[in-house]
Image (tube, rainbow over all chains, first blue to last red; front, side, top):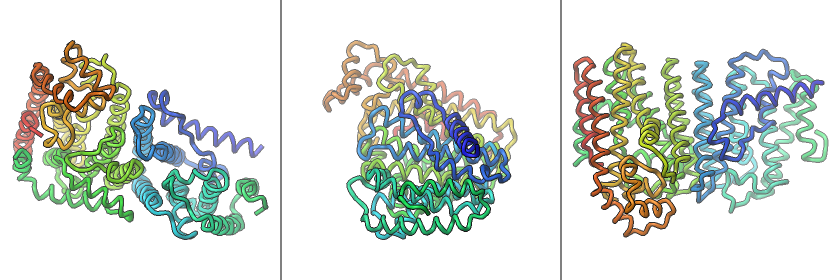
Length: 246
Length: 324
């Protein structure tokens, strides 16, 4: 029952994001832009867990979805040739989604969040550029980079709206899943923000994953404010990846 | 020489512009050496700073605060810069204003990140202005510009476009940002609403004239002066006003087709430019620009007297006669 409800909320949220960023020419010519359901889960977790959730928070969460869609679009741009119509529209769709995120926040007069989120977006692009130019040379730097890129906007949202206690969970799971997906399953996926011709030292990745697993274990133990169902959901996200319970 | 003329027009507001220039540099400071370099590279490539000067001048009709005006001016210029970086990815341009583009010096990915970084800094600067109308207008402006670019791509290499399509496209592409520069400058200085309307319309008409002249210069100017190959719009598949006047000319059609399918030789490019220049299309396009310019000047006439009004008049006259 709880699972059904959670799925429904996440699906509704994703539909709302898709509705907000809809642009007819982009939708006709560009491959469908997807909103990550794990990211949606961590954004909505306070609401799912029964915290007070206002319409302004809901709008801000949709704005974050638009930012993620913009990142997703711009990460798909070919390194050397973006002159096909589809690639050209992908560049512009990312710009359009960015504009939508700002319009949503502007409509709520969320100045504080506009300022802090734009700083985070700037930091994410800085980190992607650093990653693109030079791969991190140790597990600590790798975690820092992937954490900023994957969880930055969500933790900014949680911080701004007073849900600080949820941050360690997002900070552990989101980079963990990216590292696992990027290396264990689809080696090239991390190249979305690194150069495809360079590969990370797999020992760093393994060490980073171990460090993040420990972080996640601590975060779950500390998350006594979280309903047991959601604690288990978060465990379930990591179990299939590592073949052992956490 | 032309650039010198423009600097002379800005002379009375030099101090304010210098402050904005410093703020622009400060706003793109970055922990990423590549982003810092790429952003400064863009800033130093110059540009006419027409958006910041419109913000300054429009603000002079209200209660002027340089700090607030600078935030708005910096945001508008940064949005413009960010869109240029992404446009160069779309058009695969290696040169802009005589400088290597970010995508050419680094790669497309760095250009995407740099553009997104600059855009985020535009919002950071604007975030300090807590006036709802300012944010709503800025957001709508950005979305409309983007919509204009999306339509431009959709119309790319399509020859069944009309002059109306073109005018609607440049409204979004250029005129809106200049119109909003005036309106935002006026709003941030709490200018009387009747004046805000005149300023908004002035910016719009001046912006239309500015873009038409830009499109004329793409054909009449030299590679050296443009800092990119003359005729780039056509080579990128974009029909501009002068070309719309002769697109059905039987002698011109083969040039058009070969521009669009990428088979036009260097010699043919030169022949094509000579052909357009001598066809009368430039004069017809110039006449349309002059109509917009007259409308812009009419709007200025309605404004209260002062240095800002004088400067707006001079800039409008410059837009009509500029050579770069």
